[in-house]
Structure formats: structure tokens, C-alpha cells
Length: 378
View 1 (cartoon, rainbow, N blue to C red):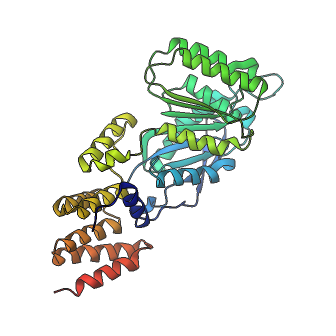
View 2 (tube, rainbow, N blue to C red; view 1 turned 45 degrees about the vertical axis):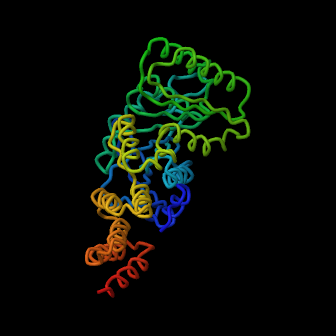
View 3 (tube, rainbow, N blue to C red; view 1 turned 90 degrees about the vertical axis):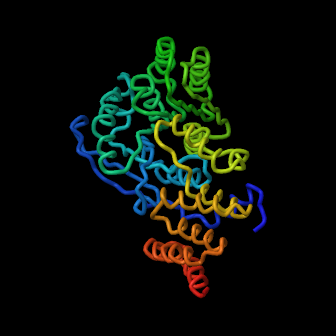
């Protein structure tokens, strides 16, 4: 097999990669003592969640019933293209958003001002329940739109340690006579260090909304705390409703900035790629392994370069890390077969075929053909 360019190898790997896709969102209810009511939660887990043992970062999102569909698709798309990890997405449905998402009571909006209680519900009831039910990492993201964006800013200013990244989309900058900017001025004056990510987006709002957004950018730019990663993006070609999809796309990329392995790093082989993920692990605060797809690609790159023993070592590492994947056994078997050891290839092809059938793998017929081929060799 001749050596291939990085991009061509990646395209080939994507074609033979384990299936990605959206799992249908689940739903559970949580009786909240803090809020004094039952709350319905929507949860989307990665498509391969049930077939693995990995733990995942969690995106918590207000107005979940409105945004679960497109945000789940965005997560799946970005993860499939190596821009972010797969995530668990938790959508919080509404009962009274004016009450829950506003930080202060305003006379013109009766019942407003319940954001602190809502955050207490998230911190003391929702997050513990999600972490009890699902395999989660400690890395959390909080996203909200409109009043939900206002709530996201309130959470950032009042509980910055609760989440690792905050995505505020067209936040209501006019609330309570420009409260978000006042809070920002106080917060950034006092805070000198903060290892967090903040992404802000604004649609074609104009007027006081745009003025508040620009003022908020100025406040942050004047004295950003050490360690803060932030970006403010004006999307003048989006309106107040349409801005959410693109904001979640760019906000998630910002939260996991540096996740993608640069082509020059991948070209450096396994040591360079392992070093990249070690550095990434330190940044996000949880262990990040080389993804199965990328390790597989490196193995085939080594195989094509005639470095059979190194290729086999890479394929074996993939099996150690992703033992429930049929694809990793098929790749190791191919390495053994190309090295002239069909007796070692056969049990791995058998394992690939077995797992492929158990998991309804779309490549199961390919695994069967490979097994039949090597079984016929003497």
C-alpha cells in the first residue's frame, strides 16, 4: 500500500469508521424540592453510548424543548469531524421561564427574579441526578438563549466554578436597566484569575441590545482574568431566533478549542499525537485518549509505510482502549495478515465479526468477508 496524504488517509478512515449518529433523546422527570415542582429533562447520549464505557462531558441547556434537536445534530456533526468530543446533552424544559431565567425582579414582569433558585436547582439537584444516571466527565457547559442567555451570564458572574464553559446567545442585555454590564464591571474588576471559557453571540438586534453587547465586550477586553478564554461574535445576518444554531456551533468549538489534531501533528506519528492529547487532557481537566478513528488512521499510515510492528502496536493500543469496537479487531487482523501471520489474524477477524453482529455494525459483511478470506489460507 503506497503512502497517502494526511487528508486522503482521514477521508479513508472516516469511510471505515464506526457508525456515528444521533441517539433519540430520552426523557425523565425530577421532583425538585428547591423549585417545588416536577421538572422534565430531555437527555441525548452519544449513539454508541450503550456499547461502550467511556465518560462524556455534559452540555446543560435552557429552553431544552426548543433547542434539543438542532443542538444534538450540531454536537454529532462536530464530534464526527474531530472538532469536539461526543457530549451528553441535557435540555431543561420550561414551566415559567420568566421566573427561572431572570436574575432580578422587575416590576413590569411580575414573578421575575428566580434565577438564583433555578441555579440552586441545577447545582444541587439536576447535576447530581445526571451524574448518577449517566457516565459523565467533570467538564460541564452551560448554554442559554435570550432570557436563557441572560441566565447564562448570571451563572457566569455568580457561580463561575459551576461550569467550565458558558455560551450566552443574544442575552437580554437590557434587563433591569442594563444589569449584565453592571455585573460584568463588578466581576471583572475583582476577578484576576479564572480558568473558564465564555462565548457571547448577538444577532441583528441593534439598539440597546447591541450597545450592551459592545459594552460587555469592552469590559472584558479591558481586564480579562488570567486563564479566561473568551470570544464575542456579532452575527448580523441572523435574527433573534435563528442565531442559536450557529452560536452553539461556534460556542462549542470555542469550549474545545485545540481539540482537533493539526495535520502537521498527525503527520508526526503516534508520539506527536499522544503528546497532543496529553496536553489537551491537562487543559480540559480529564483524560482524553487518542480517538479510535485517529489511532486507526495512524496504524494504517504506519502499515502503508512498511512499519508493520509499529502499526500492530497502534492497533493493539486501540483494542486496549476501545475493546467493544469491532473495527479495532478487524484492523489488528489486517496488520497481522499483511505481516504474513494469518494464524494471528484469524481470531481477530472472528472477534470483529462477532462484535459486528452483536452491535448491528454496518460493516459486518466486510468483517465476514475478511474472516472467510483468511480462513481459507493454509
